[in-house]
Length: 268
Image (cartoon, one colour):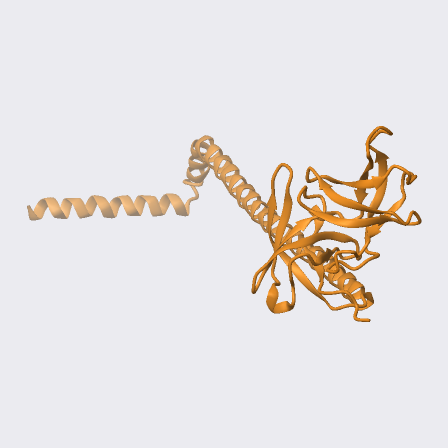
């Protein structure tokens, strides 16, 4: 066993000596080139694949970053659009409030501004509930105006904290009216929830298209002179006892959100 170990170490020593001599004599310079030559066909595809993988990774990372940036931009655009809409709504509400205040200041009798909180719309009816009631001085039969001072409706029911109003296009809404310049009293009423009619008008009264119709003020709760609308066309014929005409109301009742309730007529 000891002899074999000595022989093994002898061979190892001899091999190391021979390699050292060959290296010293530069007889092994061909080995690296040979290794490179043999391994090159294997290493080159590996390098190309690694390079392609790196490029794909960076492209994917860049694309992911762009997707995130686009998502951030879209969220920012949506936020700005929502903010713009809110500003527009606030601006419109402020404009309506200013118009209401201006109209309120020009009315010679007590009045109160109110907000529409619920709507009631059917085939021939159109009404709404407002957030003011008897506690604010509102009573049945009082006039309701739009932001421009035109007649928009009549209070039908007044409770302590809110009231129900009939808009002038509601078939149940009826009030005395007069055609300006004609000095003849008639009855204005809603027509199927979309328009108005003027009835009980004497056949002797001549009316023309675009004649102005205002409140007559006979009832005592609705002041005289509030604009209602204009004459559109004559609906009746000469054989009927009274003349009946269609009206186009000034107030766009379906666009209302704020109204003014006239509490009473001016004191003498």
